[in-house]
Length: 288
Image 1 (tube, helix red, strand yellow):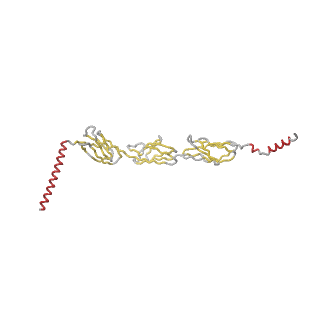
Image 2: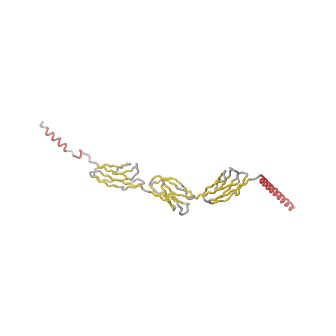
Image 3: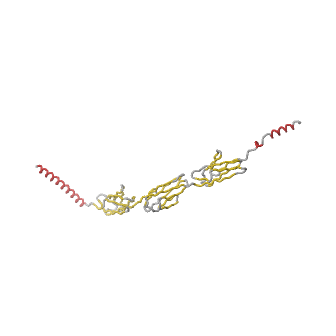
């Protein structure tokens, strides 16, 4: 029993020889970055000391007391309120808010073919803009869009509709207007439901009604009338330009007309033969 005080004293010295720092973990505090302005579900990230955390919501780091530099990583098509945050952790949690705003890019529609000062318009995702100059400008963030361009006083645009994608760069879309005119052909003299036609600009249009309508780009064209067998027309051909109305009269070849034509042809052939024989006879007489 006399050794117990000595053993107790030795044990106490051993315990006191270990530093207090080995008995506890340093306190950590949260450094929270709150996102504001990004579309729901969009990933973003913050980096610090070689560590990057990605999230679709808030981003949280756990740090001890001290000074730290955090970097907000860029997102194409968006701008952050700050990209570098100097944070001092001193015994309490820290919260920072990162405000994002979408970047807008110029989308220009450039028109050609209309007379100067003619109003025209473009609708992009149901947003309508009108202009009397040769261009219309939209400012849009990254994304996919559709557009519609109406006709103007009979002038048809090309393209008249379509889609495009904004992806960090300005866009230019060329719009060419073509003036379309209507040429109407009306025939009289054909039996009901008789097929006839018009050939114009390397295209043939047929109809069994008295009318043929041709919608074509404004210009000057030559046309030819196509009649059924035993019929001919007046005019049989001609030239048109702009909006025009062409009257066509159809006439049938009657049997007696055919006979007269046959007689005339035979007579012409007979006369031609007689003339050739007379010339041959004269040559022979001259040689004698």
